[in-house]
Length: 253
Length: 248
Ligand SMILES: Nc1ncnc2c1ncn2[C@@H]1O[C@H](COP(=O)(O)OP(=O)(O)OP(=O)(O)O)[C@@H](O)[C@H]1O
Ligand SMILES: [Mg+2]
Figure (spheres, each protein chain N blue to C red):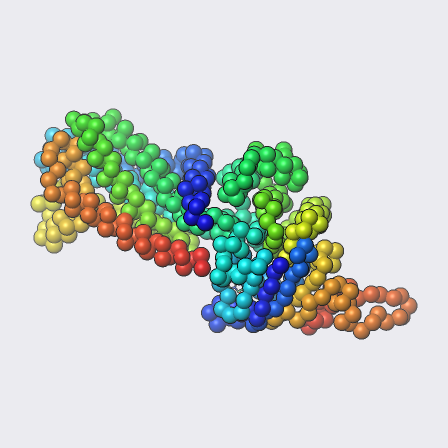
């Protein structure tokens, strides 16, 4: 049964990757909103924002990357929901395959799809003047942290994918996640915010992740904040995974 | 080959199965009849390990559906009531996918053979989203035949097919049984059961109210009256009398 876990996951991953390559528009769609935010903030609000950095787009990019992921994972919920609806999910479940392979294939597909969107967004940022002196090590650090964040949010997205009653329900859960970077250090420094908002902003996961990525891009020492960021992502991952698996077991029993 | 004993299942307050018993012999075709909502799909879903029963037991190919679900899944194949195909892949890709998931050698050849057998060769390279309902159903059934499992469940396999496609499916089902595959099918079409099944059972109000060969079922009604023309009761007459509906 679990003997075939890797083979089955690979086969099903091939299937969902085909879905992605045949509907590249879904990936482009997920990059539209973060790119619009980037244009709006850099060219409309940017002149008035005191970010304390030379290039506002460079300041902004870490938060935009997280928004990209938050909007990208709603497609994972959407694709999973479609599988549940179409009966193909039940066909897989009635076959002698490793049962969790069905979920893992969707999760890995989400990583690939988000990576493509992130690359698109970074290219647009480069065109808009984003510059980083970061070396290969720092870039790998950024990639690792963003992928960990993606993995955690993807497992979170699995839950509505399995339980939603409607297509809108399957993707609506990501709206608050897209909003979270606005209440963080992603767009403006937190010390301009009033007390309670500032307290929230400084202690929510996005701020530590954004600050860490910003330091990595700027070739600054990352300090203790990187562990806060990793701890948030790892903690969220463990909790989301546990809930998703429980939901899944309940769905297939 | 399939053994169902005292099976019960409720959805919240709705008691759907209230003690269902039947057996299906190896290599035979068993038809489960019932009105809309009688619980046919529920029985099929329990037998294919997608749903757990509240009480009673069910065994397939000697394995218990609850305790040995993985072994049951190795023994069966399911064609659900609604075609379970991947719309974005082509017909051929769908077949290759299932062959891979069943860990078979040479998935491409398997796919090509089945496309040919179900007259889908020309459409094999097209996205399933462009298929007609009947083509989708044929592909769906072809996907279920991959790997020659000893037991096949077909939940209303010919609903929505044109007469020609229906006969193709009937032919495929007969071939399966001739090769020793055990087939459990549900249907709304009484003539389908009449033409195809070795044994027929009627599920009504949560129980199997009759179970027998066509000849046995026909004897349940008073013998044909000799009037001007002798008219044998059709299976439809038997069905409608037993479930207590007037003949239309
Ligand atoms: N998941 C569910 N939750 C609640 N009720 C359900 C569920 N699935 C089925 N039912 C109910 O159980 C009853 C039996 O349904 P089932 O699908 O087994 O019938 P069926 O004999 O296959 O009908 P049909 O001929 O229409 O396919 C119906 O009244 C249906 O509404
Ligand atoms: Mg049904």
